[in-house]
Length: 318
Image 1 (cartoon, rainbow, N blue to C red):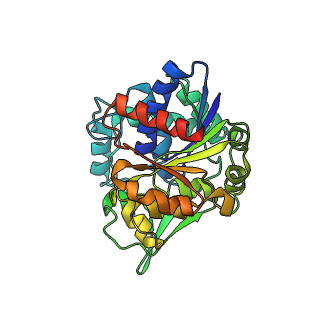
Image 2: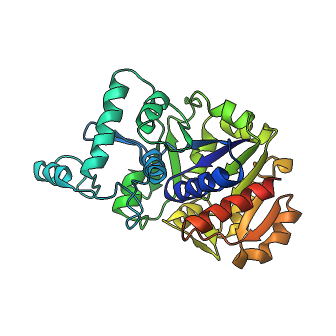
């Protein structure tokens, strides 16, 4: 069985970890591929930072700092302290020393001329992840946030301002000229199931789908496409995705996000949509829109609940 997941960072990482654990026991031999958002990526102090790829890699490797939700466990931050002392980089964007090792490796290989997909494969081979990671594109596509008076890089808006500056819209610079990374379209076309992780619908999944060719691949695959809501009872599970949804005129609700993605029968990307048990009242409206919705527990509190959510997603595909 081939399962392809479109994923952003922390929520997607936890979902992928649960999916891996479920298939190991229930579907031996299943092939898991994650197509990962790169719209949060950036160059900083001469290093190419790829937050979503790294969050997923560290989580699957068992190296993620579970308390913070990002970065490596057991980190020190001496290098970031030195950079601040020299007045280099962004003082509010702290990188751990172990994490910097990943960024140096990535930047070195990119400067050698290797594409991001090949670099990611090499870096990820350090650990037995059980999931193939493919960046959505090898091209540099970076997200900027339109605010009153100009634009901010997404990381400045998200990390420094915590999305408190009202966003008027989002611009993925370079997306029109970008192309899916090698293996992306094949992973979607050949999949038995395509899953949309509970990641930010606007700047994570939305950026992936904005790369020319990927939305069409999802819309036309023979696989069933099942999404998992990142919103529970009118609140985002993690981060500030509600600010992103507000900026594009979408209500922060499981029903509204499902309708935003839309039914494949009506030009959207979903066959089925999982909402939390607390949002069971939305199932009828989603069904009326052509989306086979199902209400199940969505909170990924531990490996067991994450694995059960993955099992429910695959059951919805069947």
